[in-house]
Amino acid sequence: MLRRWRQTRAVGLCDPQVNPHCQPGAALPADGRLRLLSFNIQVGISTQRYHHYLTRSWQHLLPHAGRSGTLQRIGDLLADFDLVALQEVDGGSLRSGYVNQVEYLAQQGAFPYWYQQLNRNLGRIAQHSNGVLSRLRPSLLEDHPLPGPPGRGAIILRLGEGEQALGVVMMHLALGPRTRTRQLAYIRERVGEFRHLVLMGDMNTHANDLLENSPLRDLGLVAPQVQATFPSWRPQRCLDHILLSPGLELERVDVLTQAISDHLPVAVEIRLPHAQSTDGVPMLQPSISG
Image (cartoon, rainbow, N blue to C red; front, side, top):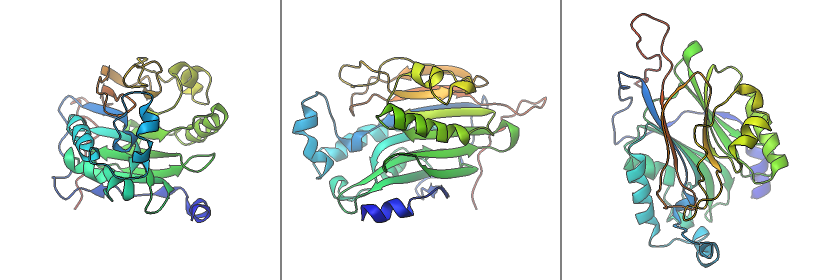
C-alpha cells in the first residue's frame, strides 16, 4: 500500500471543499485586515508533559474519548480567524473515529472553504494530513508533496488576482536539516511570481535559519514573532512561524497560550495589499461560487 502511494502522490491543482452549513464568500472588512493562524494540532492529542509521548502514544493509533473535546476546544479557537493552516491532522481513520478533522473543524469554525492534503495514507489506521480553512475562496489551490521521505507536503494558494494577489504557502517541514533545505528550495522555486507572500506552518527550525541560511533568504521575508512555541507546556523552541513579505503591513502578532496540542498556535493579523486606485478598495475580494 505504501509503495503504491509513493507512485501516485503528485502535484495537483485542486478545488477547495465547500462547507454546506455556512454562506460562501463573506465580505472582507472595509479596512482589508486578514487574520491568520497556524496550528499543529497533533491529531487532537492533548500532550502536557514529555512522558505523555510514551503514555499517550497509543492515541496515535486508536480512538480515545477525550479527542472530541480537544477538537471542540480547537474549533472554538479557530473561529476568530480568516485563514488557518493546520498540521498533523487526521483525514478520517480509526484513530480519529473516522472523523475527517479538517472538515470537522471547518464546520465548528463556520469556514466556507476547506481542503485536506493527505500526505501519508495508512488506510484505516491513519490519514496523516495538513489542512486549510478559509473564509475566502482561493483563486488557485495547489497540493504539493515535498521532496524527501514521503509524508510531508505544502499547500500553495492564491487569494485575489493579478499583481496584488496574495500567495500563501502552508507547510509541515522535515526534522532533518538536509531534507528541510531541499523542501525549502522546492518551495522557493514556486513562489517567485508573488509580490505579496505569506509562508506559514510547522517548519521545525528557528526563524534565523529560515531567513538567513535557507533557500528563502533572498525573498526578504520578515518573521514577526520569535516567541517559543514548543513544547506547549514549557515553550523553549520557536518552530512554528508565519513569515511575511516586506510589502504586507503587520497589525498584530501573538503566540496563543493555548496548551491544547504539544505546539502553541501562532496568530498574525495583516493588512491586505490594496488596488492601485484612488478609492482604496481592497483588491482581494472573495469569490462567490455559483
